[in-house]
Image (cartoon, rainbow, N blue to C red):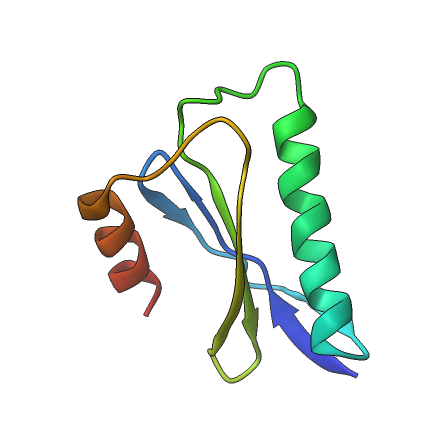
Length: 87
């Protein structure tokens, strides 16, 4: 079992995941990240113009997957700022 983290970029701002979750494989962690993105997108109060992205990061800090929440996108400046803040 390894710990994976699921920070979220929302409106160009990073919301870190400091606790993470334990999974037996990166594939299971990626599936969980995709489910989190789907769950956020299915919330009736979710602002689809916010450009939300759920990242999947392993315990060593490697970004192994990114899942965009349907309905929005980050512009290049906000994406670069959010990723820089995470690293």
